[in-house]
Image (cartoon, rainbow, N blue to C red; front, side, top):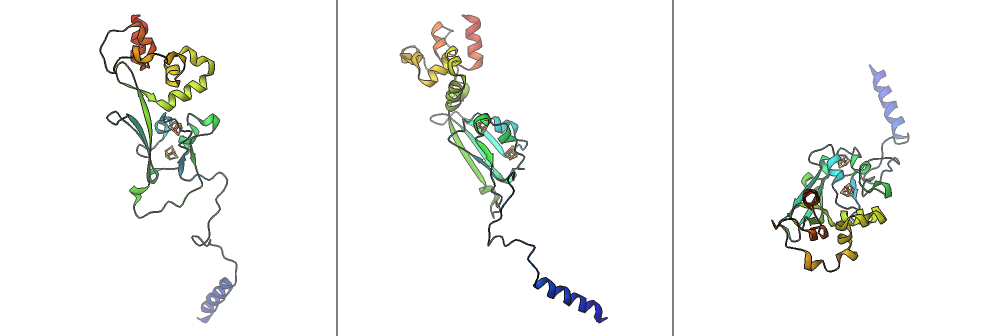
Length: 207
Ligand code: SF4
Ligand code: SF4
């Protein structure tokens, strides 16, 4: 009868003088492995607001994108809801700027516990470029500038990119540009506008 008690006592005394197997978190920080996948973080300097990460996110609510055409100026909002992230890494892997360093990266931050999970949200805004003929969304202005830089000399085949960059074709554009959302028939000077794919296609067919 006493033997089990004595064995338990021996185990307890041994445990007291043995090295600890648990960590001292939160008193001491925890080192995570090199390839650890923690909270996704945006680099707002390099992010172009293209939305590729939103399209590849397997969660329907973790990364969300909304184009607000009523804002002045119109903006695209990309929202990250950490509390629904499954840390799969698709966003980082499929980021448009991945070849020069992804603009969204899974960090080593893992301690995301909170009393209000709905506070685990961040939103980033990007100014939109609208079609200068019909008012449809072409993309973010940052995206057009990124394409200009990416294409190099090839960008000179696309007047919209030159206009977006403020290049030589942009000179005197105030005179030829018409207010957005006009229903005027296609004209040659429309080639000097930033157009959505639909208007660009119509223009190329009609003229
Ligand atoms: S890690 Fe996965 S779930 Fe989390 S934001 Fe990126 S794509 Fe979405
Ligand atoms: S794919 Fe990359 S560049 Fe595009 S919106 Fe997402 S983080 Fe930004």
